Amino acid sequence: MASVANILLVEDDPLASAGLDLALTRLGNSVTVCESGESALRRLSERRPEIVVLDVMLPGIDGVEVCRRIRAEDSLPIVLLTARSDDIDVVVGLEAGADDYVVKPVKPRVLDARLRAVLRRVDQAPGNRSTHGDLVIDRGTMKVRRSGRDVALTATELRLLLELSRRPGQVLSRRQLLASVWEHDFLGDSRLVDATVQRVRAKIEDVPSKPVFIETVRGFGYRFVTP
Image (cartoon, rainbow, N blue to C red; front, side, top):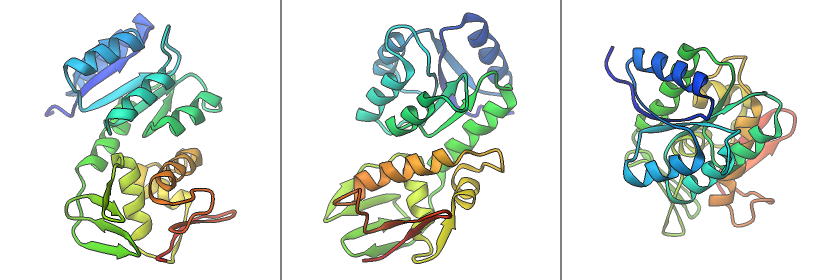
């Protein structure tokens, strides 16, 4: 199998990191392991991986803060490792800019599949350009501009915006968005959708609490609207 990705794995549990390192390497990836947030940030300043797998509970700088610091400077894909699916750290981590999360203990093939899905979102580049008021979405160059200025979106944020804007006025359920953007089945988590919508709104809306482009359809999902 060809190499899938250069992965930075940030995990302080030596047994967990050794197991994931070995398994992900056998699946064709190149893995670098860091045991703390501080060492991970130093490593990132020296060499940029293709994707970061980041444990939430780290000594010193925790995973959420590492995620926040990465996202302040880079759209690098980030997948969180968390001990509980209902942990508040999941929500905080998603709001900090993570693209996805998995619950430990995780089977290496499941994690590998999630990483592949996130990286596919980086690579996908459908054609065409659409204009919605002062918001321009260029599907060929994978760029978004608002009032003539570039909008910095992560691959996941961009994929979500592309999916919603593909059919203006049509309501898409959270389950539909999980399937099309995250490639999740019924095991997906709607918090991924809600947190990413909030992040996109913060970047394209004048008043995120009163959105013009992405409307919430209560009890169902979201709809993209051209002003």
